[in-house]
Image (cartoon, rainbow, N blue to C red):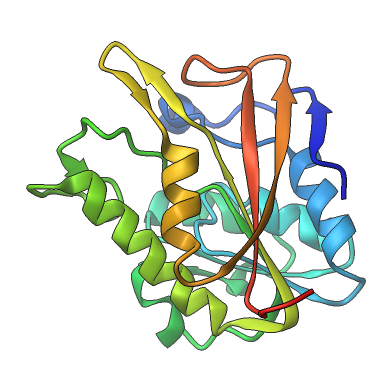
Length: 216
């Protein structure tokens, strides 16, 4: 696989007004790139942070089975309206993903909720903590330890993430996520995605690749 991709940040239409301030989707083209390379027709694709259903909708359009988890009921309802098999998107907390009865997947692809190191509320829990950012990274590692158990033999994990830049400085989110999730899955490399426009002060993001196996 190439180690960089040049893509346009084009989204499939506007979200409903209720979600306009929460526009953090990645383009369908990005999901299609990795689904096409890392899965085959009829295989399952899992999105642990399904959001507005981009990964699942693309998976279905490419002849795969899409399964996902989304904690926000409003987003889950919207995303189900995009799917041929809406029952495969569960409204639940990904921190309990192993208990949801999901079938093995060939690929788990997602963009988890981003968090800056100065924030005092863990975005995965919606609650303040003394070391909210550290807790967030630990939660991500715990979630992906469970995702590891949901991978079919030879399965892959792709996490789209970026470093963040704001008035407080730079959060090395991409590196921190790679290090945390790398404790429970084998880090297999990264693909740099260069965009014509992007969020949080950057024009690129990263797709981090992981495997559950020790080799290959």
